[in-house]
Image (cartoon, rainbow, N blue to C red):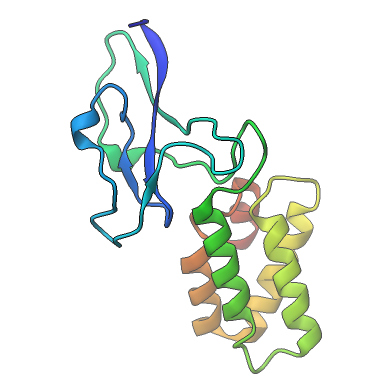
Length: 163
């Protein structure tokens, strides 16, 4: 094999990294996740391009499988991976439960979530709106949203929301 190459990652559809080296160490591959029971994938469900895993370089130390920074979107077609879609859906559903927000604020919060997971020129605006509305919803609500989106939020959004 080459000295410098990306292995293929195997991740469950809920976002648990199963094996960041599914090609070079197939003995660790699983059909289903041991943490949640969901099926696993190693390629984009939209374009079928493999998910980038461990970066092999000559003379580098191995890292544990769960240390892989899993991507939110496919770099080949731009589609969100299943774990990104699931977390966005859950965050939007949770937003509907915030009784101390007006219907308009709930809608604004839900629309902001789409820009929080992407790093675009709208991200700082969306993150600021999110922070303001989530604070109005209360600490428990804000903490619940944080727990859902922390893994999929862009770095720019994280800096605004949780400095």
